[in-house]
Image 1 (tube, rainbow, N blue to C red):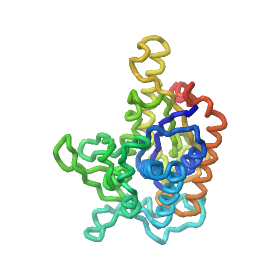
Image 2 (cartoon, helix red, strand yellow; image 1 turned 90 degrees about the vertical axis):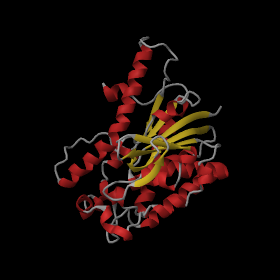
Image 3 (tube, one colour; image 1 turned 120 degrees about the horizontal axis):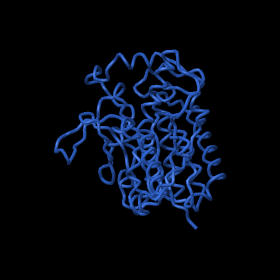
Length: 334
């Protein structure tokens, strides 16, 4: 019997290679079907690659498209960074002048010489397949600069600009302007992580399965209090990009409690079963800097870690999909 599941893919720059590994491992399971994907930033890139590949060539196509995506990412060399910052090891990348410079220099200072280094990577997607009716539904999140609200792109709305908007860190990239049919004007967009990392609500639709798996690449907890400037900056980044996800998970937990206590009638709202795949132990060893520098060796290390984490989830909980939740939201939110 085929088990159906929805995926929520977090953003986190080059750390999204962890999600590449998770998806690669899931593709080994012929009886596991991804029905819908919501993604932000790197999660949006992974989602677009996964869907385009599935539509083009099934599981083998998805694996090949993901591999091509991360080969292109590894060749970028920077994410609006200096090319000389090419440290050899993950542990050597705990701090760099990048974090300081990005707070002092606006991307608009480049004038006519400005180029978004992600554009060639994102333009390479086959958008006929990314936007196709077949394959998993795909939802991509960005933040409207003017209103501060989340915008979710789907179907034919998903374009090069929509994906770039989802990954647009404002201190590194110029805002992406896209027409908004609701306001009738061009709206500027920043990274979706500020308002939905990723947004879960698109997966609450009645026709979609109740199982939702979050691939979390931003550590939820750190035991030590950050004291050094780069440690503080790193933790602020993590908290900011987890806040929207935690709000939605808390809402799911609240609905679950209302349903279980009989306060709300069954069927009134969707009873989501939440699962999570993460490796907080690894991610706490990394920093904002490693998110910005897509070094091929580090990307492959993250991919291997993602495969291992996904394998652990499947061995422990594949049988739970379709039956029971495996994420302990009550413990998470008290």
